[in-house]
Length: 355
Image 1 (cartoon, rainbow, N blue to C red):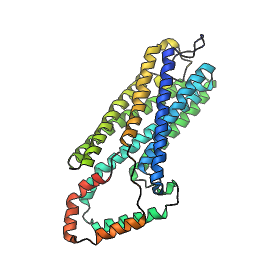
Image 2 (image 1 turned 120 degrees about the horizontal axis):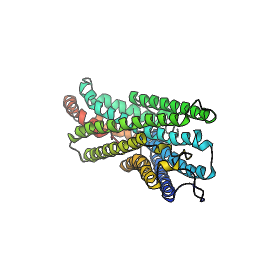
Image 3 (image 1 turned 180 degrees about the vertical axis):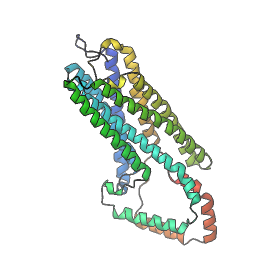
Image 4 (image 1 turned 90 degrees about the vertical axis):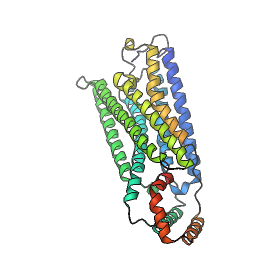
């Protein structure tokens, strides 16, 4: 990338300014993500780790890692840290990206679940509203029993697609660790090209991000069309959130992946490279495209569409009373089953927010 300068500055002024600006943006996103996480947990702490909490945790942690990366990159370049231009800088660069990819892979898995839930409900012939109420009461009792547990991981319900996402992230993390070991080993020997190992890892992540952007766009379109059939003001609002997030992810991920594959911007920490490879203005613009448009914008957009606080959880006694009132209503069982069968697909989409 850019070499060290002899005039008391590590990078050109424009490159330093972009790094400081990106660090400031990531710091703001980190603050709002963790602040919102604390507020959400204070309203429904007895529910444990909900989907909304997990997204805020992953996005906040990812942007915190990027914030540390930009700050330490400037310091390391000025101080001439040898380790930073190899394994240390690679780890600090790669780990926040894994968290970022994990957040949007989870979002993709939830969208896939929602797109297939309507079809699953239509195939379920033995559905009974009374069984649904009993199931809801059992969930209410389990929530009441876990009231004193604070953010316990045992309260997380992990679906099959979410387990697949976790497995993929673990594999990527193992690849990152193995690459770090190879880069560290290559520092003192010419048998291993550390720069080539880092480039191969960056290209792998870029391909994943590019495919993820396309997948989110496709399933976002499918989910948008399904939700468009439901006549509801709330569903209409969620529908446009899905459309906006799908478009933002497609554009941002495509641009960042293109920059990662075509340039060495993700390896910006490698300050020992020849400074004549890139000038300051071009490097600054590529940094903005890769980090700001490719990471900060999608993260901020997710926080924006998830800005509503969840309703406070009702006590088990209040929920039981409400359920008893519904169960003892005057609606006939046959009419109730016909009404449920005709609206189950629409209610499935309207009950669960896709964001």
